Structures are given as C-alpha cells and as structure tokens.
Image (cartoon, rainbow, N blue to C red; front, side):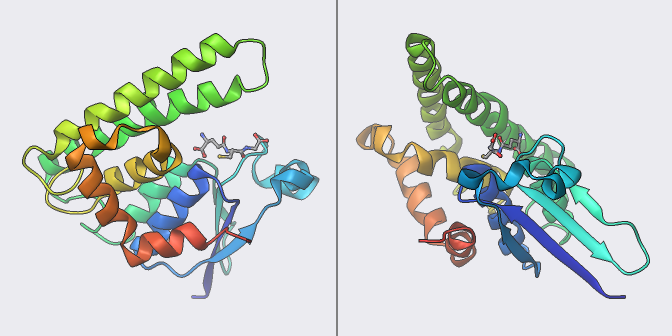
Length: 207
Ligand SMILES: N[C@@H](CCC(=O)N[C@@H](CS)C(=O)NCC(=O)O)C(=O)O
C-alpha cells in the first residue's frame, strides 16, 4: 500500500531533532519548510494540521486511511524509534528505561527550561531569563557524569537520548565551559560527525 511521510518544520532545535530521528532510522520523508518569519504557521491550512501553530508536525498518508498527524517533536522522535526495533530505543526493559530517563532529563530539565527562558526574550523580565538560562546550562553540564562508563548518553549505543541532548547542546555551544567537560566534548564531536545527524541539520536549512 502506498504511503508517504511529510515533516513540516523550520531551522529550529525541535524540528532538527525530529529530522535527525527520521534520518537515523532511514525513513523516507518529504521535508516541508514552514517560513515562521512570514507567519506560514498561522495560516488556515497549517492550523488545521496543528491548532497550536507550532513546528514540527509529522504527517503520514496512506491510501484509504485518514492522515496520521503528530504535533510534538518528542512524540515524532519516539514514533520514529518505533519504526526500527532496537535502533533508537533498546529492546531490553532496563536499558530502555535508562535511555528514557536521559531522554526526559534533556526534554524536561534542559530543553523546557531553555524554552521558558526564550519565551521571556524582549519582556521586562531580563533577570528571570538570566536565572533560567544559567539553571539550564548548569543542568546540562551535569550530563558530563553520564559518560563515566559509557560512550553515549545512555549506554553503549546511540539512542533518542543522544538526539535530545545534541541539538540543545549545539544551541548553547558557545556558552559551555568546554575545558571542564571532556566527556561531553568528546561525545558532542562524535554525534556531530554522524552522517544522519549532518543530514538532519541541513533538512530545513535554506541558507
Ligand atoms: N513542545 C513543542 C514545541 C514546539 C515549538 O515551540 N515550536 C516552535 C519552534 S521550535 C514554534 O513553532 N515557534 C513558532 C511560534 O511559536 O510562533 C514540540 O516540542 O514540538
């Protein structure tokens, strides 16, 4: 049966993470660039897909079925992981739980705090923005401990936790005290060099 996958997005951390996940599992998909600066995400057609007017959105179309729509980057990443057993999420219960622990460490303790700080940009709450940014950076630095025994963020294999950690680290690269973070430094260079990660970084890059 014919099926197609589309990923609507822009050059933002949430969209790049979703794209990297699709690239890492080798799913064939069509990127649909949404121009946030012209408000394309607030148009009627786009709001019909995602009433929140946010990117990314994944749409799977299969003949004879209603389109399947996902409107959260983390749901898209986990959905991609489900496409190839054991590829981005271990099949072993405990190993999978550790991957999810570290995936959510980045999603809730680092990325969400970063978003909260970002949302205060241009407001008169500069001090609050600085507090949130400093807290997010301090939390991110604690990821250094995850490499005591293992090569990746959550074990011996690349996983959704590495995807969650990579783009937020990239976005604050110039603000991290790299000499104090030798493990994170080695890990970051290794993840950045992955061909699928490189492709994901370019999917919505229009420059
Ligand atoms: N929790 C959502 C957040 C999505 C989100 O905030 N997307 C931003 C770009 S990273 C966006 O669409 N911003 C445009 C706007 O809010 O107008 C996810 O992870 O997918």
